[in-house]
Amino acid sequence: MLNENIRSIRKAKGLSQEELAIQLHVVRQTISKWEKGLSVPDSDMLIALSKALETPVSALLGETLAEPEPDDFQALAEKLEEINLRFARRKLARRRALHWTCIALCAAIVLVFALLAVLRSPYLGWDYGAPETMVVGVGIHALEWAFVRVAPAAFIGGAVGACLTRRRG
Image 1: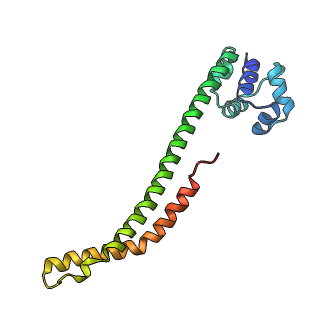
Image 2: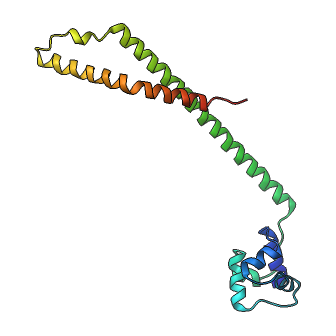
Image 3: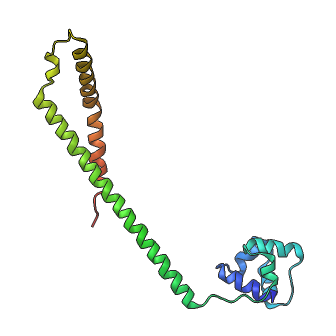
């Protein structure tokens, strides 16, 4: 029982006898003897074996574990493929959204610059004697000043983002 369980769990984990032996700090022949039923691990080694195989000691000592059937592998492979496809679709959708957001940012910056050029800052000719006019004029001037300073970097970032997220075919 123990020998069959060690072998089936080791194989299910995708470990060779050599790899398991390295983890347990024993020689490969020791693992082979355990799996052939020629010897058994002592209690300390059994605990180390359960940790290496990530399996409870009771499962090692219990009844023979059934090996997974090929149909189970096929079903699992299909589920994994479906999950991978969903992730790929989500990634593509996020990439497209980011691409078009970058393009929209660049277009908005160009439009605002065109609007500022056409309007030629009309607030500069206002009468700043009235407090309300002064506050609004200074606020608009501050926004325009900040936009003119930040927009070139934002435009370059948007253009680079649009180029990096474009569809490669």
